[in-house]
Length: 269
Image (tube, rainbow, N blue to C red; front, top):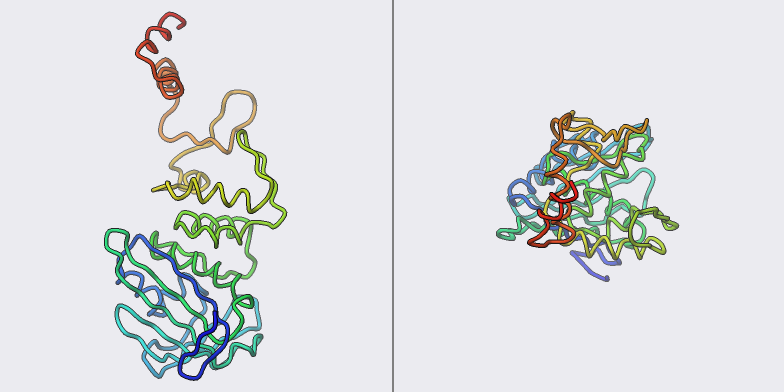
């Protein structure tokens, strides 16, 4: 993309996400210091008033970003100019802006632009932080920068991206040499898996991370009595006395719906 905004010309990064939340909630996330701390980096100082400055720091890194606040129009627009990036001089004089609009029943749309430098230079970072922004707006829990990002941090960012239907951002968080080991279907690599994810994910309305359920003590790994637990299966509630005939009937009806399903089960049970 080539664009010119008040003298700043050049390639730029453009990203658009739809959040299942109000426009006002999304605006708070991009137009307050507290909001920025929740999805970009916890180290933010300054003021969001027009003409003021924001200073961003990053844990265990000798890196600082200074942005001038050019515009804050509630609840639809925020615009900054980069005055300094201690490790990326090309950021100087570039424009960073958010445009927000109501999307009715779907929530709101956040259109983000970083203009004045090649998109490839910043795409990986902004893909990751837009997913974090979406997660913060929708769930109250973003994934801001931490000193040493763990595999769990990346997994949460990936989860936030695809559950927000931002499948391009989710794909970029997958390894280029991705290999999968799943009971059904075969995927030749990242692009093949990402295409399948987009097809399935577009129909998903709500997703819970199993690890989060266990950590919150809302469930526990399933133990089938063979000496080890199945971490990919989680038991919700009390499963000490399962109604096995009812569960078997439910499973049979699901895979082979038939008026005679209950008769077959009773004869075999």
